[in-house]
Length: 109
Length: 83
Length: 149
Image (cartoon, rainbow over the protein chains, first blue to last red):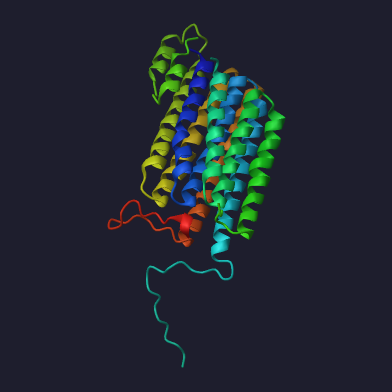
């Protein structure tokens, strides 16, 4: 069993371990759970690209590609998170419920 | 079954699952996000077949552009699909 | 090259690590240098962490805990696996090898920077959208049904 066998094992293990993330995408009650799973799958795809590059032997091509991929995935998940945030508090930045009550400042009469 | 064929099998199965999820889910935003996964896996498939530049464009278009455009349109129309 | 490990995956999920012991026996004549072996070990540890993240993503009751597991485990496992493969590709110490490792380290640094940021952005969006964390009183199935909102 050489390095190439191990690479195949690592790739197969990565794919199998992506199943719970895919399950979370399918079932996740709120759409935020699905976003988390998409985020996980995105970063894992970058790692998988490096694995495939090692398997092909021409890693120098794939490594730039995996780097660009990590960038793109970050942009996409940030955009979606930002959009989710924007619609709820479009007019004014609605502050979330304050846990600790705010101290009443003595108003200058 | 060589290593690459095994990857092929996994990617194709995941793509079918992602496509079915994307169609079945009620929330349009989630559908567009799962469509992002579909283009991720498509790009993996290209990379696995050796076509690196095609995979690169697919990644740039799929994750970078079309997912964000879909999300933007979802927020201008009603978020719940009516069917 | 026996493919028993790969076939066992088709049936069900079985993380069979006996395979690595087999590798160490043959290190002498199968061209496995020291760097390859420790690269493999590093990548395997990364896989184990990702197993933890995957189980966390699957079993945790509500959004915040799932994101906790996914954000952390995902970043660390990517880090370790990439470093492992960096060591594996470095076996000939040539200039190209070093360039590759530097690029891999760039990916590692980038993932370490961006993954927490995107997790934080997601968490903030979830929090302001009113996703309720599971407390002792409420049942575990209480995560706000996004569909009907």
